[in-house]
Length: 177
Image (cartoon, rainbow, N blue to C red; front, side, top):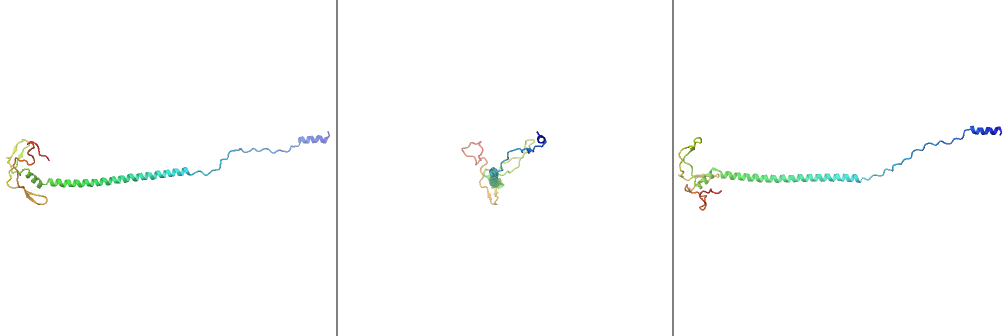
């Protein structure tokens, strides 16, 4: 071999080899999320409509209960007015029945006469002070009504007679009211 050839072989050996590109690291592959599709508004609308319906029903029920209470109050006020009227009527009847004129007239019909003597009972000793006298009407009792009309009791039954007792009733029975 010639020197040239040997230089060539040496040159080949010492000559750098052409460079190959260095592989760069490849990026890691990953899944790409799918494009955001438009989500359905149906569940949101369903929840909103349910809440709105429940609220309206709640307000409706509350209104019904309040109006029912109002009707109950109205009914009770009317009942109270009727009871108050009845109470006033009964008070008037009681006042008329317990008036001195009516009591005197009823007493005269039952044969009672005004007392002519006053008697006292001593509670400590139990003794009667005074002399009891049998009452006999000397003149008819004059009774004046609330209207101002005066009437005289006409006939007074005998002291033993009781106009309330019927002839068939036993003697010891009390008069019926």
